[in-house]
Image (tube, rainbow, N blue to C red):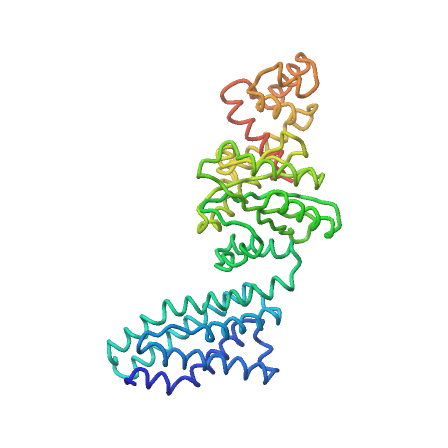
Length: 399
């Protein structure tokens, strides 16, 4: 055994102890190790074993055996069975990888650079075998989650994994008989308020999942009964105008089941970029107007609300538009009237029919808008200004 491998062997126990102490210090779910000598000893034993197997296998680039991978999977099962969260599992894997690389670096430095060939042997082994070990650990973790969690919670975990870039999604999806497409649409359905009763919501979500075959998760809003339903659905490409039927159908089904006004935003991305798509979809949903459950309810895309998105990021413009909106308060249903007017491309006949009023009543209301704001709704200036005022008002952005 060369000098680098000998140094790694000499420091194996010390480095393993440092790893266990780092877990206990930096990951809240590992702090129990300070009060549980047996668990600490088992964690230490596993950490030492991993380092010794690295030293044994890397000189001739031998693979981890089936027994090795089985042992690693059992550790994943034990930690999942103890209630470790997916976030903590990810942190453990990142810390372990960083500390193993630190061990190798320190051993190389202590040997005054060591043998470059030995260093290359370790690094050549570490990357592919480290990946195999992580997969085994993850599969063990998922095995226990499938036994412990109800179906809805498993699907929610899959959705969270996809939306945070957690590789565990590749193991969860087959277990739930769900496919992971190359390109997806992330849809955020914003619900300011909903009926009490989590069990009812779980039933609705389970029905949605089984009907639409899509990962779905409910994210409650702090301090309110509202929140967001987030869904990941297959999408053929990046173009999403109008929204694909599967996305629109899911939004309508959920809104109908919930029976509450909501607003939906959708953004698309390749599977690896879903966290960014989630942020875009969330912002779109907050800019989109709230709508009651109906066949016309649909998810909005960036193309639908790009002006409102820009306005929301410029406070002094938003404040000015809000002042225009306040001038409409004395009028009879002027915001709803303007919404119908612009939704129907300023066609008086179809707009008045949608509002169930006479065209002359529509004309009266439009004149009233002009009187109160000094802006003609049918002018270019009126379209640019008042259409944004209406969207911002109906989105609930101004309370």
